Amino acid sequence: MLLLISSRLRQHFQALKESVTPSPALRTFLVEAARAFNAGHYFEAHEIIEEGLDEVPSELWDLYIGLIQIAVGYHKVSQQLWSGAGRMLQMGLEKITAHPPTAGGVNVEALGARVRADIHLLHNRRLDLEAFTRSPPRLQLRKGGG
Image (tube, one colour):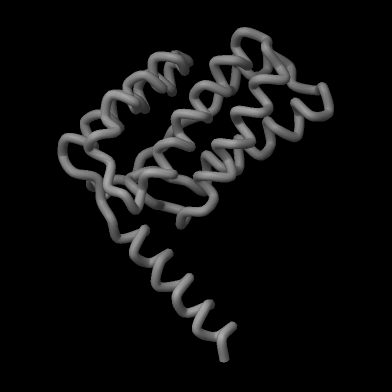
């Protein structure tokens, strides 16, 4: 019985996180951060997200902290700081994957898959910086602001 209640609460919480949409102000920060991130300016992306943290609803706080950690992790990849990159990407991945596939205006599922693949490459010392640069990670946003 307790397991069933726990499962229903988890489903309700996930649905709640899925339904929370960013405010227009947060959406502006998110779009700007995605542009920087997708241009390979990971450090700038992390700074932009940090600037918008006052706009983040509590239900999405960990998601946005995870996005910051992922942006920092990819900045470390670009600097060839492999150990720090792996740590930051792992911490960010743990935070974002606690959210539904499309939470807070972000395609969490796609980003999580890419981060997971890059962590695997880093742990096996197989991340090729040239290949990474040719096919960089993307921060994809959900259409329509939510």
